[in-house]
Length: 358
Image 1 (spheres, rainbow, N blue to C red):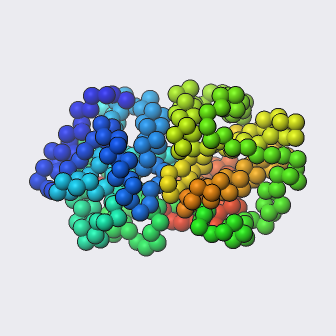
Image 2 (cartoon, rainbow, N blue to C red; image 1 turned 90 degrees about the vertical axis):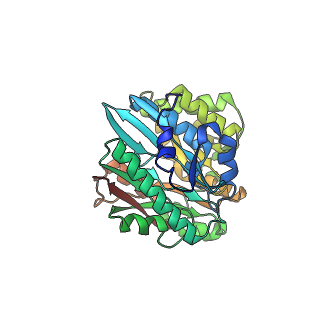
Image 3 (spheres, one colour; image 1 turned 135 degrees about the vertical axis):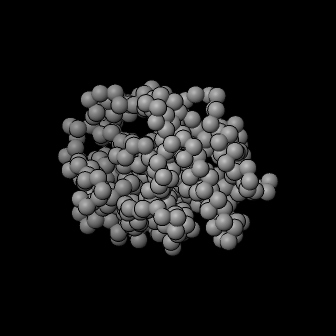
């Protein structure tokens, strides 16, 4: 990532005739964190930990990469957070947000999230202004179209972002995401599991035991890294990315749940991130010599139990692909989705918009 950010002024320049002010996140991490505290729901992808990891992960894919993520001020009050990236490759600009997006690169631009005290009337007005500002930036950079996404925020109705985007002529497509509702009691959650899974989550039945790594343990972490390399057959993640995940554990933003046999042999594990409201399934690796055992099933169940202890509201398992998706998923991807679906209590639609500036 290039430290000097010559493009951040674009946000200020194109909002100069409004009551909005864009404050650079990277220079004001504490203000970003404080603004998150006033949101009703905080997806993990909006946290500083997630943005820091994703910018490190993605910047190598571009010739130039800039973090324009902003705290949005209205008449001097911090009222929203807006994850926002700008990158350049082969003299072509892209605008998007930090975060994964299921086989599509780069990801769409996330919508801004507003603090709970902002009225619906004001929110509609501000969203309209923000989309206008992004359109102006896109035109200035000769970007003919860009995508945005309506991320889940624990609201079960059509969002203002959806209505305003559609009203401005955006095209929309639908994808599906799998969630576990952690507000349910554990018996209610288990009643939603796929029938065949209910006998596969009992670690005692298979002489296995799960452990939690929620603080620095270099020995266990090294075993997990080695297992990931063994499963992938090559290095797929930089040492820096592993260090950041370990930092997440030390900063109470992540846990490693690992599994051992009765002889304490390390058989694999899953690493999970979380905000105050949402947990996500980040990365897993299991010894292929033991795949006849339900290692992944046991880890998922233990994760759900741990997230409930932390009073987290929702656990995002990931994407549920379908053959009719815009990009036909691979057989491997379909199998992963099928596995995750067996734990989900809810399947929610997620809307992705294509905005044209020409």
